[in-house]
Length: 165
Image (cartoon, rainbow, N blue to C red; front, side, top):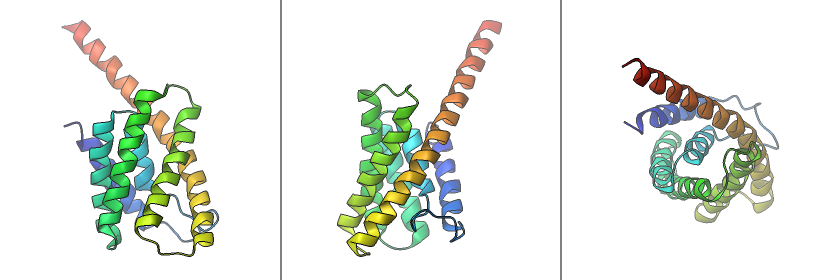
C-alpha cells in the first residue's frame, strides 16, 4: 500500500517526460521528472524504500525509453538508496536540503549512467548534466514541499478522526 501513490506518480512523471517538447530545456537538458519524483519520495522515506522505489523508477523509465534498461535500473536504485540514506543523516526540514540533495543526487545518477552507458562526448554530457541538475533541483524542491504538505494534512486528518471516536 505504501508504494501505490509513488508508483502512480512515477508512471505519470515518465508519461510527461517522454512527451516534453524539445524546446523545454536548459543547456540542452530536459528535467528528468522520474528522477525528481524518485528523489522527492526517497528524501521523505528511508534507504530501503528509496532503493525499492529507485528500482521501480528505473524499470518504468527504462521500459518507456526502450534502451539501456539495466543502466536505468542500476542508477535509479543507487540514487534512491542514497536519497533515503541522506534522510537519515541530514536534517531534511531545512528548505535548502531537498534542493541541494536533488542537484547532488542528479549529478551522481547521471555520472553513474554515463559510466555504465556512455553515449555522448564528455563535454556535451557534462553541459547537459549541469542543466539537468539545475532543473531537477528546482522541481524537487517544489515537489518535496508539496509532498510534505500533503503528509502533514494526512496526519492531521488521522488525528481528527481518532478524536471523534
